[in-house]
Image (cartoon, rainbow, N blue to C red; front, side, top):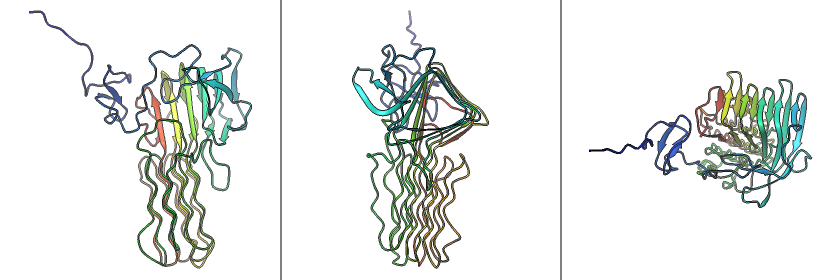
Length: 377
């Protein structure tokens, strides 16, 4: 009797190329074909169109179609320090969506090739996330920074409107850390005791490019300010993305309180990094991270110390500690290997919670080597 054979893999079969038959999706965590977006991870985006219109780029979470065609003369090479404001930079090019409608949610910078050299640094700030499109290649040997920094500028696309704020702390409690890829740490309690201050919810589904959420300020007299959330950066190449340097989309550390009875601020949540290319090479020297900022220390007899900004994929950004003489310590920020810590409790004031990690997306889904935090989802 003749038999029929189907070459399509079944649920649970490996998908090393990130491709599964209709009705199945490739789970980033296990690199196997599964039956639903839930099995592939709660953050699975809508599938991209099967065929992109000419002049459009991106097969994952973001697809853009620059109005001005990319030519061979358009080369972007950065060998010094440059800052793009995504709301006003002339480097941002107008673009359409694949259906032909106009859009302006992102700052899109497009060129034949984009290179950040070993001595180069690109900082991006502003309300809009940054999208880099290389119709040939993108290389990051230097630093690409969309992180927020305590006392400095906030990252591009940080603190978006769709962040769900936590309930504000009261009395002398610390502020909770910001949430995005996971919940931030709770704010610690102060003189009034009671329950810690819970953080806002994390993003169960990520369906658009966006930054992380800020931590809340502490309560009481002259409390610490919350850290800003990390920004958002998305790289698209039709050929190859190579990373030997640093991509940082982390949240900022929070401020410590300045007066006895003031709670420390909560650390900012990490933002978002997206990588979309047929070939993605992350070297062992590379650092790709969207970690949470450290929470601020509550004030006691002295002002509390600020939480730290994340400086690398690991260890966690430390919360503020050791300066207050009675205030609760700030919680450490989250990393891919460590959950954010809750702010410390103290009879004078509470410490701020650490910020949660952000989100890293890779299209097509695959495992990557190198130092990456949190792991791609």
